[in-house]
Length: 130
Image 1 (cartoon, rainbow, N blue to C red):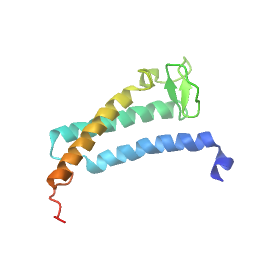
Image 2: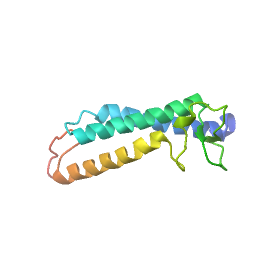
Image 3: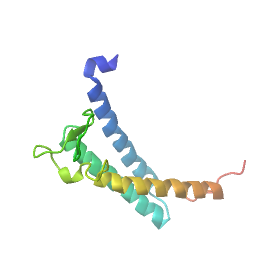
């Protein structure tokens, strides 16, 4: 198995970082909307993912956490040895990046569902009636 060759933590960290890269690519591909609310939401999604990637990459793929943690696979305790502590998980289990990501993602999902109900796509194209 692949996890035996490179270790479970390495796979988790790579998956964690890869998921943020996918979010950033998604924002570039879909940010050409005409709606201002949607553009601002994509900006929040991009900034949140970018801030989280900075915190992860500067700390060896692990997110610094202010509170006590039990799982050290993708998190690490915040200390004077960790970098960009202000980007780490400080607000309960959330970071500044998370606080930008989550509401932005919810708004994008809500607007997409409203558009689909009206028979439109993200780029305001009319969907064919089935």
